[in-house]
Length: 290
Image (cartoon, rainbow, N blue to C red; front, side):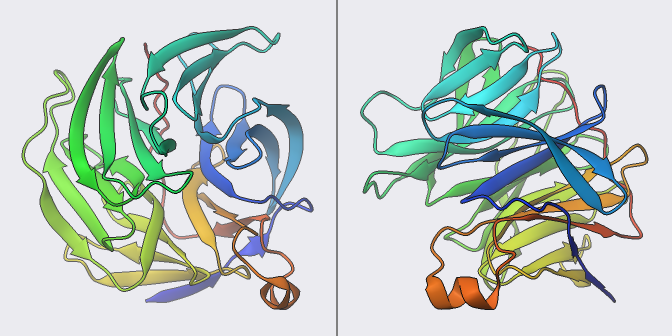
């Protein structure tokens, strides 16, 4: 087992940084600050990330993904928004019905360009939460009994979908047909100690999972064994992704949310982004094809 230690990559900190993705077309790291409703971008330079853009949407934003038409697919509180560089915003499919005590949370694009989005309790809601698949404007419910839908990723061949239910401390797996988008019944892949949050896969099919409250990312092999760890100087590690031209740099988002004054004094880098150079390679980020 290798124990890595992540380095602080941004001078800025964020309330609830989440959902890092690598936009290879523009050589940018994209992420969101959920509670401020902000989409951010940054240049990766060695271990550092220089913030190059920030755009507020005036409502919680669960994720951002590059779209095939050059716009950004912004996963706003209730629906998908398509944001052009010049400022124009087009409303897309609805994920959360108006008035529901949920908000969108983590999202990911499958190898064929479909978008999957999960939901999170919000404004006093207590679930159940859902995981949906967006294929064009069709919204298909994959799960409707989750406590808190979180990280999503696929095996290198696209044939297995992995999904996190944070409060159940479970990573689910199911067969996935990339051509049709059809899915098989879900099965337990991992039952873990702690609160699993964001997740990504590497080219060997291992899962890299950020653990909220633990200041750690763990790498799990196919048997469920932890084979590497990444220590982060911020307890609320929220998500993880591979970035850079070779997809060897692990980017970790963290949060200041839910930390009291003593905790923030002990971990002043909370809310920053971190990076680690690891002996693994990530999978390319597909672009959302509506």
